[in-house]
Image 1 (cartoon, one colour):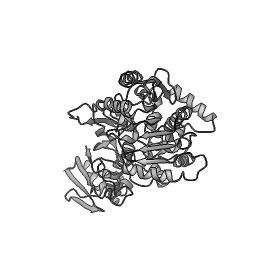
Image 2 (cartoon, rainbow, N blue to C red; image 1 turned 45 degrees about the vertical axis):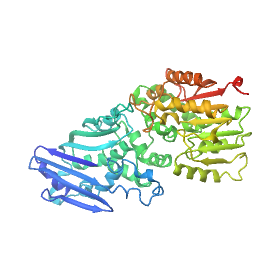
Image 3 (cartoon, rainbow, N blue to C red; image 1 turned 135 degrees about the vertical axis):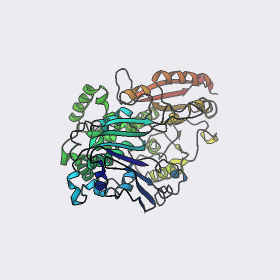
Image 4 (cartoon, one colour; image 1 turned 60 degrees about the vertical axis):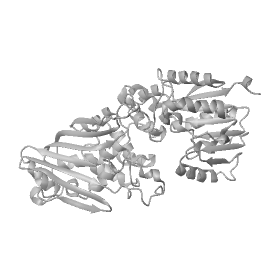
Length: 489
């Protein structure tokens, strides 16, 4: 993870004094297992270029955390990408420049605009390139976004989500660094620390003089504060943001792209939604909540639902809801992740003794990739947002196992509707989640369902979940497979 700051033109050599680092010395510090270095690659009267590099200990990144015992926590990109971690690592080294308090002889240069070039990365961001560009072009920069080409032996994704960003334009050193310290975590959308009221102060401090006029201020504030109560507190102090707070808590990993709908030509629809929402006392319902409601409604209406298998149950949120449906006697919450199963166990323990609970979910280890006779001949099997995390070439075999070996009476499958990504103003061919292997259009799901039901003795019906958009359908697709009666003995 690194940042290169280059200043050119008359008096560019002054920048080293604004940074309070001698070009003849290498700044090399180790603090809490992180090595930070600042090296001047050029230091003349008319050009200054400095490389700021941080190198954390990857083991220390997770040691002592609640998930530290889980080996999968050690497999991540935090050691490499430029994120909130990087900003925290280099803040001490750049404190003089950020605060605008060099030695008295150089105070006059704090507000001087230099010709700057800023290079940083790699950045792992879920934002489309056009949004990344607008975050910085709105500040007067010429923006270049460079992506590395992926070289897989199989077709996974067309291009990497990791990017290197180059900014060119006139700015003061202090403003340039403050903008980066606020916007780099917005790009990465990851915070390694507890988000509190201090973040509001940081927004005010680093955003002074430019944030209020930024066209993506709403996105910046919401991705910085994240929590609705903090955003409300910010609004009480600074004035209302343009869109409803419900979107922050609303659509899971698609909420940020929903904020950008107006940018994609859906302004009239967005304004209409705001008017409707302002007339309602309750905020919009999360898409995940709508999925759970749709699934539980289908299950509740089934004549037979004694035994249920919730495949890929995660932390058990859906399984816990199924526990309240009359007629249900057993629920197998199947999940391969040990950490998720532990959290599911905690959730299920809270169901003990609650009014209305008719069946206690049982968390068990399992996977669609391995046959398990416990899954055979159950009344209902559910795959809620599961199949898109599996490589397409493996799906036909998995569905064959489900329909011809497990043979549930009813199979419920939800998956994203790719067409709806355009409503979210997502970049073409990008996915709603970094772990998705594919996302299908409505027609593609129909074609797959036809193929699967020819292999197994099932009939199917497809429904939509979530708000309907003309021409795009609904954000989630629900396929309901029912086993044909004549196949039963």
